[in-house]
Amino acid sequence: MGFLLTCPHCGPRDYTEFSFEGELRPDPYETPLTGMTLWARENVAGTQDERWFHDLGCRRWFIVNRDTRTNEIDADV
Image (tube, rainbow, N blue to C red):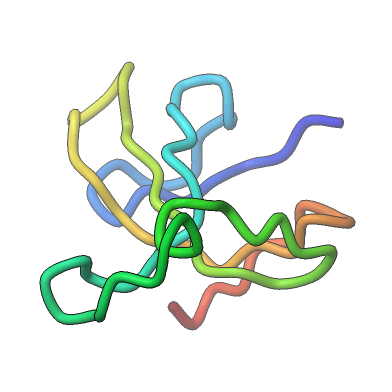
């Protein structure tokens, strides 16, 4: 299922131009270590903040709020 991501620098682009870098997790330097829970992904079925990198464009990082069930993007992030 394809979808568009809106890069804050380049505008709307097909998701194939980007690298998914996982859900946004707490800063390890500000969070006490609790075993592997810091590194394990939650893999939620619903909305989550995610890090994306624009490989074939501006080569910058940005964060989107995506519903993992429908790939719907919340434009308010």
